[in-house]
Amino acid sequence: MRLRQVVLAAADLEATIEQIDHIFGNQVAFRDPGVEFFALRNAVFAIGDTFLEVVSPLGEEAAAERYRRRRGGDCGYMVMVQCDDFQSDRERAEQLGVRIVWSAELGDISGMHLHPRDTGGPLLSLDQPVPADSWRWAGPDWRQLSDRGDAREVLA
Image 1 (cartoon, rainbow, N blue to C red):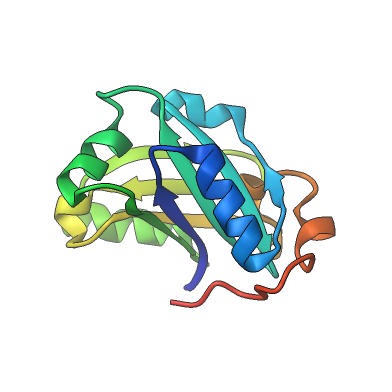
Image 2: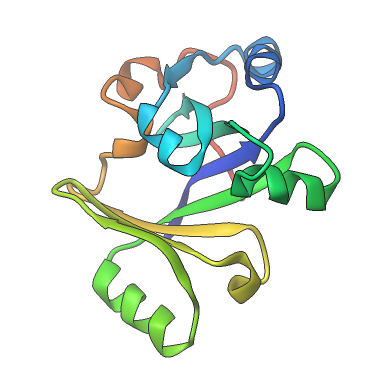
């Protein structure tokens, strides 16, 4: 497994994007309309072949907003880890009684979000992309934008 994406929750998406661009010089690689399913708006920055995502809740009852309030404001929200054997990892989570709060198996990626109370930290996502060097969650153009800033890699 390896860290692939770190997600921050922020009340003001556009202001946070401006701060990241100012500090690191990285441009937004993707805004995923699919995150509306989670009552979010987002922006994903490609930093090498790792990613920094900022999500902003669309309402007071969005899970990310409830988490932000519990943490006292803008905060780390999710860690996304690339795995090599999604099915085995899913079975292991189920054996351990870890709640899976979202799951999808698509043609180019399989992913699941594990409940933070069961993992002892932020929301944890295990994702297996196919091919392994791809990353659907960063959009189709991330490779062209991955080295356009001072930041080169997201490290744990």
